[in-house]
Length: 230
Image 1 (cartoon, rainbow, N blue to C red):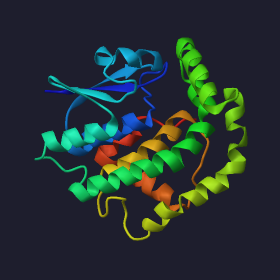
Image 2 (tube, one colour):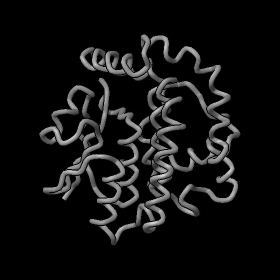
Image 3 (cartoon, rainbow, N blue to C red):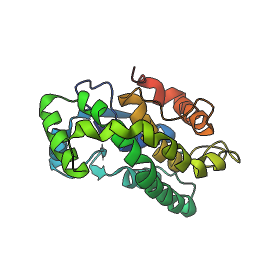
């Protein structure tokens, strides 16, 4: 049976951009599981599967409905143990939880602020209204002002990636010789920016950029099926 994935999208349903939904896309590709997607605008998320979650991704697999990208990854490993593991065992799951927290606290805040107006521009008017209200409440100022200092903050952001950059001098993926869910967590953040904005945050010679390119090539180029923002 084909899994149904609800993923966030704007006016162009062929350009899903949520970092969390991309974690699930890569997880499904990693497991080699067939799936179909349902493009879901911000204001439609509360209606997904009877309001099971305030956010996407959400998957339906037969009679099972699972929200949250990390919970989905756990579900996929437990339900399809004969397919490649997303965690490589309990230790990998625990490590992935650390990577998730690091990404949410270090990577997402800068990328989300830097691309805020780009995301706004991808949305239908009703979703723009929701996005503006919610983000202005979060940032405490008009959304037009939020990305204004992204160039000044870029050097500090690149410096904050040094632990990842240093680790990649030992191995090609966060998961080691091959990728695991921990890679998809960080990949999702950079894929988010790649799809919504032409703003370049990684230098061409950065090992993190080389890792990201390797991730884009995974699973027959699943990450490249959506072109980068021009």
